[in-house]
Amino acid sequence: MRALCSAVMAVIFVLPADAAKAPVVVIDPGHDLRANAATEPIGPGSTIRKIKDGGGTRGVASGLAEADLNLRVALRLRALLEGAGVRVVMTRTTTTGTSIGNVARARIANEAGAALFLRIHADGSTDARARGTHTLYPALRRGWTDDVYTASKRVARIVQAELVLALGFPDRGLQERADFTGFNWSDVPVILVEMGFMTNPHEDRLLATPGYQRRSALGLCRGTLRALARPAASCE
Ligand SMILES: [Zn+2]
Image 1 (spheres, helix red, strand yellow):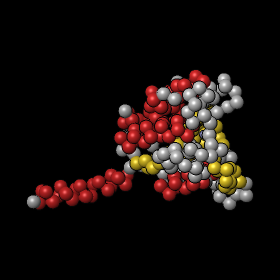
Image 2 (cartoon, helix red, strand yellow; image 1 turned 120 degrees about the vertical axis):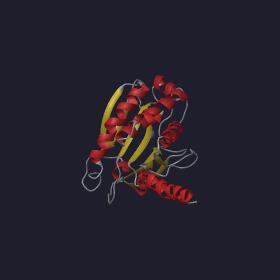
Image 3 (spheres, helix red, strand yellow; image 1 turned 45 degrees about the vertical axis):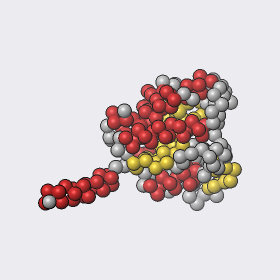
């Protein structure tokens, strides 16, 4: 009885401690079924307002909506990260509504106390030849992003490298953005990946396949775990 009691005690005391240690990653699949033309301030206290969500792009060959592609990769990534012992919070799990906008997305990440706010997108261009993967992170602005700038830039570099390796698309590098509402409202490290161009027929056809969605999720998982100083091999 004594042995059983101590076993039970161990379970009671060990599990919550482990759960508390696990980092939280907030995955934000960009856009939703419908755009949102309402406006919101681009940063806390700003008089400059931007549209909440322009709606995203669409596959020129596949016809797939960006919101659907983003979610497919996000759901695969959630499974991989949870399998590796990371707690995941999603900003959405279906593509059925009007986009909640970028302030709301950032607030979800802030309230979760996320170790990383990972925003998943695919790009669009009027130039069908434009292709490749890039990762965006917040520009430095005192009072808005000074608390997350350095950490975000570091994570962007790591995740970009892993995503390029996983997808095999051209490396378009990193880009700082001062005009992203979801960056300026974030109080936790934040990056936005543009996996590839859905307006490029080649990249669109590949990204529309389950195989490439898996590759993308794997690259994002490895990058995230490396950034969190956890073994990237646990993504498999
Ligand atoms: Zn997008």
